Image (cartoon, rainbow, N blue to C red):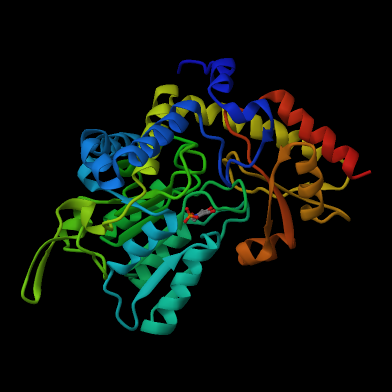
Length: 395
Ligand SMILES: Cc1ncc(COP(=O)(O)O)c(C=O)c1O
């Protein structure tokens, strides 16, 4: 593992000159190569027109699929470009032919929008949604989940790898092994893990994996991607509402889905952002995902240790492995007030409320947390700066 050249990385990241950005789980600071890729393409579109620019940049656009594929250990033909992680999740869910009585097995830490979609499926199609129990230390109990899968025979198992609301990392590969053994469809939300740690869809054993560009991957906003396995494609799964990009041909009342995962795409895409996402994937791979994880998680561990030393601060992260999302509640202080005060000092954080993590926060007995999400480009000094600022603001 080559050590990261933090000075060079920060020189590549203009935002580090002016802010202490600890909101990478929200939207990260993009590095210059990504910024240049996006602005160059926008300039080309301004000069010759959007469709003409797209036609000219076909090889570069194709290479985005190669880059995303390499990033997650997939063949490029199993990758679809989507609007964002939610769009990818919708496309994947829409492909599963649910009928009344079907069961979706998920966890108590799955992303709130996904849970809302499951509830919608429950009310529209009579699908039953079952949440796997947690282990006392946090995270889904994989043994109990296996029994649940055996008993309920779900049509779909779905797990959010890293939730939006805590540092938990779920054992997605262990769940994948169970799904493969029992031939159950498996959908993983990797929105917070892509770009933060190595991801390999073969190791995970998933049929679908969803992600976004703007978070730990450090790409631009407004784009994401969906991985679809050969198994899912072989089962003939296709989106409920394909558009003309999702269809290869139409004849009378028949149509043939486009090959590979492209059937999950829409015709229109923000090409500058698509190219930017591909560049961000290459940037991360050049640095090395293992090195990225090691540094981001080490900074986060030391932040947790320092926060726990402050009077009235309660670190809320659970689970064996804890990632670069650090959450804490503060006695007598609303996280929003702290967030606003920190922002005035150029320190960026975010806040998560119970409405984004009802099961988890009720179990922890908290209503609001301050979410601090460092990345590898942050420094020990920046970690110390937020600890000092919080200590001062809480007095
Ligand atoms: C775990 C998780 N899944 C999905 C999403 C949705 O991502 P997007 O806003 O790109 O659709 C988020 C966003 O915060 C998230 O944290």
